[in-house]
Amino acid sequence: MNHKEIISKIEQNPIIAGVRNEELLQQAISSPVSTIFLLHANIFNIKSMVDRVKESGKCAMIHLDFLEGIGRDNCAVDYICDVIKPDGIISTKNSNIRYANDKGMFTIQRFFLIDSMAYETSIRTANSIKPNMVEILPGIIPKILERISHQLPIPIIAGGLVTTKEDVIEVLNSGALAASTGRVELWDL
Image (cartoon, rainbow, N blue to C red; front, side, top):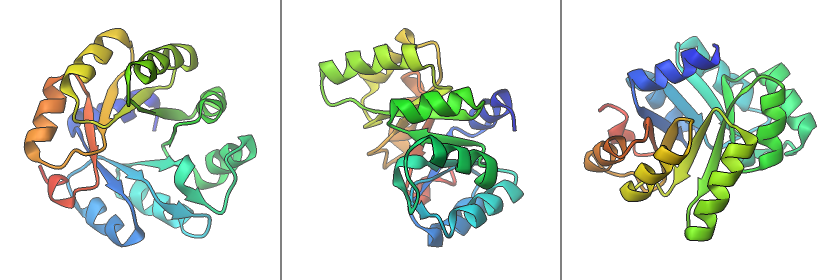
């Protein structure tokens, strides 16, 4: 799936299923979401998880920082890209995003906005690294989401602490393209 198709899928359904364990994967696949973040997996089950997601016609994004049994270096990115073949990766690490970008992978860089310094660093980093999307955590900070969406030329995902339908509506109205959540009951909105 090319980068425009991935963003288009997310636009079609702005709820992203954040799957924290293999047991929830089938529920995410059966839900109407178009994109699934694989937030916890290991070297033994990640290939089959990605294959199942892609076979269902949904986008599979691997959170590289939470993938057990594999390093977090360029070799790991090569392995994921060439063998596992997800639609993209998620990471907080600049080097992983930069290298995956260079390989042509779709990238989502996660930023934790804990104070104004983290905010400014996130803006500078995103403008320098140029991921395809950024995910802002916690996702329930509408004023900040609105501000950051005006400062970055890339789509924003709001994640973390998104627990109600009202949270989803609020973050979407604040300029985020999508909301990622582990709350199963929100996957069917």
